[in-house]
Image (tube, rainbow, N blue to C red; front, side):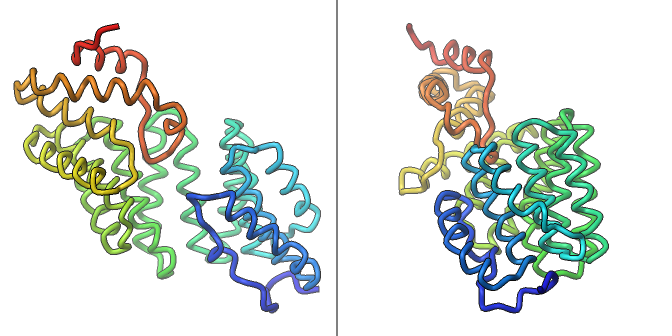
Length: 305
């Protein structure tokens, strides 16, 4: 039985993903299970189960994800390289979402060791970016983000370069959290360039938002305001993205410019948005807000009870 290479006509698993619709990806992976068993390719079966586990965990069904991953566990060997890496990564990712970070860390390190040994740089960057998400404090996350950027710069794997936008954005976000806005600005600019190369409309939109928010903190308020107004136009022309964040940023810009009265309706609209934003607060690419921040929006928007 082949435990190293997929020599069957089965499809490449990464090509089946739709990360925005994990339930759709789950159906595709489940449909492949009978064929994978017929081919008797253990490596493919393990990798398929790993991807299926991730599709299920993205729907926040963590117990079910572990149960699926259990089906692959007896067959996992480090000789499988890609399949083993994917298995340890996805098992760790489920623990990460369950906030069992110690278990996640051990599995990520195990996956990373194999990825380095087998020179699977695409997967290695995925693992490092997950390791960067583990620490609670931004100063503890930063070394991992910088490690990811260094790894990216030195890899000869062209497929791994697809991580460029995400990793520059993540590092920029880390510097933003630390209040090092000029460093964040430079990384966000690079992230936007990479998103444009990828022709990712949603990615470009989100990169522009991050860039504008950082411009506000570097006191280039007029540039920040112009970008945010353009993003409002994009939403009104059909871009399906949360509008409350942009409304809030416009309000903050107007406030800094001394346009308090003009800022009020934007704070009011942002307040209404964040009061009804529960399901989207879990999305990685949009920040959540604390209750005191919502209370501030209400006050500055002069919202009556």
